[in-house]
Image 1 (cartoon, rainbow, N blue to C red):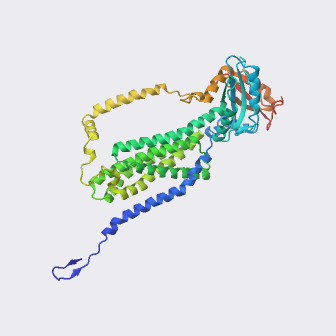
Image 2: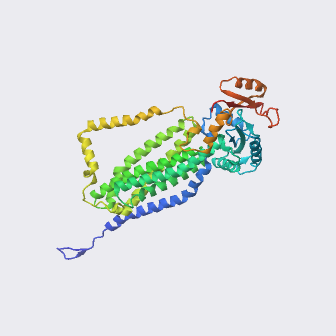
Image 3: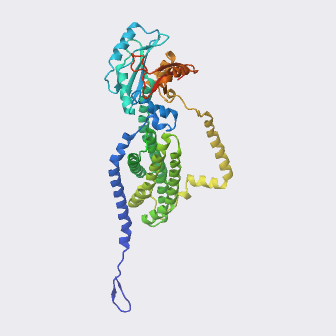
Length: 486
């Protein structure tokens, strides 16, 4: 309200500055509330994702692979949802009659145990008389079921009597592998979180700022898991433990990177702009194109995995792409809204103020940048040589893979048992190769298999353990081949 100097009348001026200044704060509050609502709706679906895991070999291998076709045909001959566990008993001085009697009693006790399917086989003596083997089928419909069966066997077979007992074979190795991955997920999540917190504390020296990226990453992960769950249900996409585990890693990694870029730009703009609203607009204008370009590049690269023949890669591509998209959207919406509402207080006790010196012009990193600018040729030559030295480790890469027993960094029961079994039995006894062919040519198939170098034995699957009559399904028989090598 002002007085006109010529006429002396009062003039009233309406201002909307206060309304305009509050509007972005209201929008930011609604964005955060919207994300909390999304998290609440997504949570139940995200929790169900693990129930859709398919970790069967047929889901990992290419559909056109011969082994995949055999796995499907094998279901007609025997229960496809069971996995054999091999129980190995060893006495270095030789198995005694008392040992055999004790093993027989323990073998009879496993029927009906949790996760165990059917009865144990008859004890199989080794040629050197120092070991016995039992084959017991366990529930193989899931990693959890296999783990339950193997745990039941380990509890049922004890080491009384002076001989050692170990549960190995496909089921034992799978159970220990699943346990290792289960522990790895927890360690990986905790380790990643710890590293992110340390980096944020060192860079920004704020006791509260580190919470902001972690909250954003958590929201992105919940949304990504829910969308992957719905995608699997609607499209039939195969989801496995590998793709779900990597989803967590990628969302954490990409989300943290995007958050650091946005926060760094926002802190710079708080020194240049008079208000937090102007600072967040400038930060978005500067960081959003880089984040969008980075996210889009990674998403397109991951979707190229859809062209892979390997089922596990096809699963990983869209799963990881969904995770990157969720991380990108979260850091372009939720994070700016939260930064706007909190202003520079998140950076306490070193909150940037309008007009203060920019960090990019002082301190250690400024001196490093100046040195690189003055001595650019020296910098790239020295760093290139250092990277070349570090890259020498690639010469130790084994492109043919490693055996299951060599995949652990700690001692596990299945690996110990496998090594003992390899010492006393043909190495492939517990995990035979499978041949399916015409029933009329069963004798020729067995003879041909036995003539192959590296084959220890080949037998036709019979209608029952006590029978010699081959089991015929749709005019075909199954031949089990034990290899001499693991």
